[in-house]
Length: 78
Image (cartoon, rainbow, N blue to C red; front, side):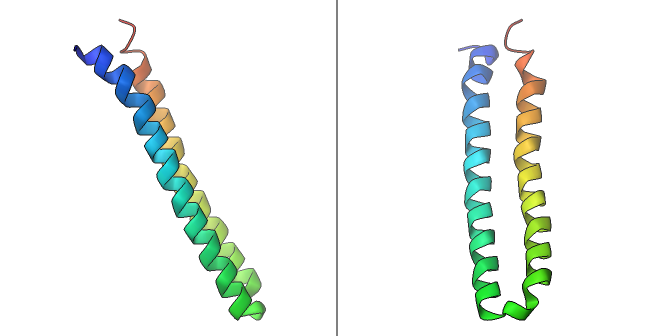
């Protein structure tokens, strides 16, 4: 197996694992925020803002993985 075949197999698996991990992380983060809001409804705005910032950082990791896939895709066809 040459490196092009290895990349062709590894890139979709890698971005899939990144998306899966980020999805699990987002789910846990949102669940924690909803539980916190349920316990302390008066802190709703603060908790929601913190959750949105955290979700943006988690989503950025998935976008970085996707950009990496696009950068390495041109090495597959040559």
